[in-house]
Image (cartoon, rainbow, N blue to C red):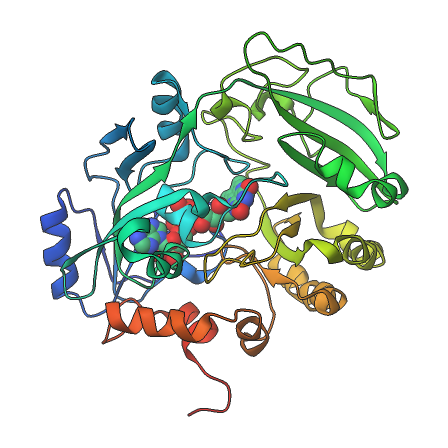
Length: 423
Ligand SMILES: Cc1cc2nc3c(=O)[nH]c(=O)nc-3n(C[C@H](O)[C@H](O)[C@H](O)COP(=O)(O)OP(=O)(O)OC[C@H]3O[C@@H](n4cnc5c(N)ncnc54)[C@H](O)[C@@H]3O)c2cc1C
């Protein structure tokens, strides 16, 4: 347990802790001089690391409470989306969206603005209606939409810097079945002609490409399929052809790890992610990078990446393009702008990927690309900071919750606290 999921980060913590109660956690936080919390370890960079105390919430009570009147669910912050999804589904409720994998924790995913896809779907953190946090002094702080307003918007995508999130309250809606259909070989030219129609054609749309040509190898359409609704899957989709067998986004891998396709209706939590909870997500051996560009820049941004295909292809497993709705969360890449996310699953060769990323970042620079907080990037800190208009307020919020900087680590110091030009 000393490395992240991908195995590319060995955590540098001097001490590890698994508190069993919030009171034990409070005591631990008040005593510690430097600490971070770990979710399910799925981030690819050092965002979760610290040289001090590293805390896992895996032994806290995983209780889940549904409030039917308010249409919310409250769960322990370390609960995995897959576990929560199952319990909500059994009770007849759903979350608005999920990431490609259900293995990640609620607080860890929200802290980095983890997202799925869908023109109308905000990232997962947009469902947060309230948070309970143990701040640096060991005291409990409750933030909610009703009581805390904009401060909650600042704390939700908190990069782990405001304190230990112990409970997360999320908006829920009535459960709806979802079906998933996959199409092969969508020409880029058709996407250019019909971008809005294609990304708006289903509840969640994912486009996969290996950049070998102006083509998306696979299109995954996740459509809500309420009882009694007759949904046909046309044999053709903007020039792409319906797949006759289940596929993995990485064409050479078995589709066994993937959620059901071929139009079979199923529970929302078993269709919105691409990967199944009880299987290894994605390839299991990889690094990831993702850049989010404002939606209006999507097509030129995709063309700019395509120009680099000869450099990208030797290192790439697969790329995925998704859409995300605008939100009000200060440190979300989608703050007040709908975005298109361009994702890269890389072969596990960091020296080579590290050399390539500045080229991709330069190609995407005209399009205000923001890197995913939980993945690998090489953009200079001052560039990253310049992309977040609410950064000064975020800094002030973290300083109020953590005046001595206990929760600060190298990642936060680099991308949040170091102010270019100041000593
Ligand atoms: C195979 C794979 C597929 C992925 N697919 C997607 C995808 O579809 N979409 C997407 O957007 N991302 C995706 N990711 C990235 C992933 O969702 C993010 O890195 C996410 O942050 C991981 O959550 P985690 O629980 O593992 O958090 P960790 O990586 O453990 O931690 C992330 C951050 O959250 C903080 N944190 C965790 N728990 C708490 C807490 N209780 N209180 C305060 N801070 C806390 C940590 O300190 C750290 O800063 C994928 C990653 C992998 C490995």
